[in-house]
Image (tube, rainbow, N blue to C red; front, side, top):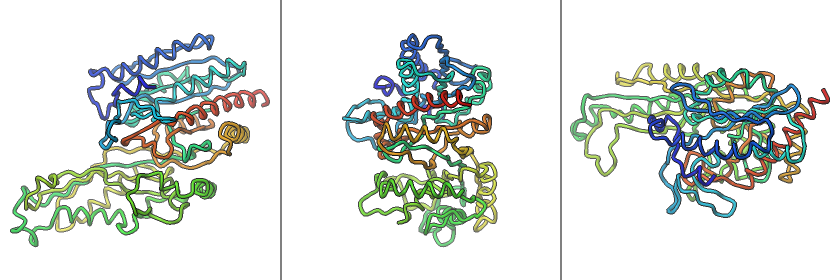
Length: 453
C-alpha cells in the first residue's frame, strides 16, 4: 500500500495522457506482482491483466471454489487528482504512516480492495473453510465514471457468469466502531451554466446600473433551482418518496453517529450544519437532491480584478439526485428550468456534461442479514449499521440492472476525516483489516447457505 500511494496514477478524466505517462501501468504491475506472489496459496487461481484497445486495463483474478453460485468482488486502482490543502509534510503521493492511519491518495479509495479481498480468500483457504467460486475484478477508471467497465463486463461475461453475491469495497463507513452497509447511492447530473451579457468587459463605473451583472443573473437562475435560504432544491420533480425502511435506517444511523453526522467534516469554528435534526441531515445526504457549485470561470483572481463589469460568468453545477430518480430526466428538467425566459434577455446556456445513475440495494436475504450481524458483532463488537451513501458508484447501478437477483454487500473504510478526493486522505488500517474479516465470514456463510438450499 505504501508503494502504491507513491504512484500518481490519476484517473483518465484527470490525466488524459495516462497511457503515455505510464503511471497506470506501474500501479497495475504492482498489484499484479503482489497478487501473483499469493496465488500459490490458492491452488487453481489465475490472474490476467485484460487490456481492450484504447481502454484502461482491468485485473481479473479467478479463484476456484465449491458449488454453482459465483461471487464477484470489486475494487479500483485509479485515483482522484492531487487537490490543494494538504497539511505541510503530507501529500497525495507521499505515504505517511501515523498510528493506525496511512495517509496518501488512493489507499482508502480504494486501493486496499484487492489486497483485502484476496487476503479474505487466503484466510478461508488456510482455515479449510469452503467458499463459492470467486472473481475479483479491479478496474482503472472508476473515478472517471467507469465508462470502460461495461465493455469489460461484456467481454468477461462468461468468466463472471451470473453472480449470486456482489461485494463492493469502494464505499464508506459512518464510524470505525462497527460495520457499515451502504443501502443506496445517489445519482448525479452535472453541467456548465453560462451567462453572457457583453461582448467584452467594460468600466463598472460607466456600465453598472445600466448593464445587468452576469453574476447577479447567475444568482437569480440558481434560485430557480435552489432555495438559497435553506439549500432545498425547489422543483418537486427532482424528489422521490423515500422508502419507509430507509427512513427507519436513517433514524438508527443518526442515533448511532450522534453529532458525528456533521462533526466528521472540517467545519470552521462556530459553523453549524444545515439542520439540527440529525435524521434529516442523513436523509439530505442520501435521498434528497442537493446542489453544489464546484467551479466558477469568468471571474479574475481578487488581486487581478479591476473595476470592470465582466462580460460573462460560468458555473460548474453538480446536482446530487435521489437514488431512484432517472438522471437523464433530471438533466432535462434542470436545463429547461435554467434556460427559459432569461432575465434581461441575457444569453443563457446550460450544457449537461455527465449523468450518473443512482442505485438502491435489494432487500437483504435472511442468511445475509444474519451473516453481517454475526460478523460485525464478532469483529467490531457492535451490530452493523445501514445507511445510504451520498456519492455515486456507477458500477453498482450497472450491476444491479445486469444481475437483478444478486445480493449486494457494499461497504468500505471511508470514515470520519478520511477525506476521499480531498487533502489528507487516509486509510484507517484496523478498519481495513476488520472489513476483510467480515468479507471472509460472508463468503463462508454464502457457501454454507447454498448447501442448505
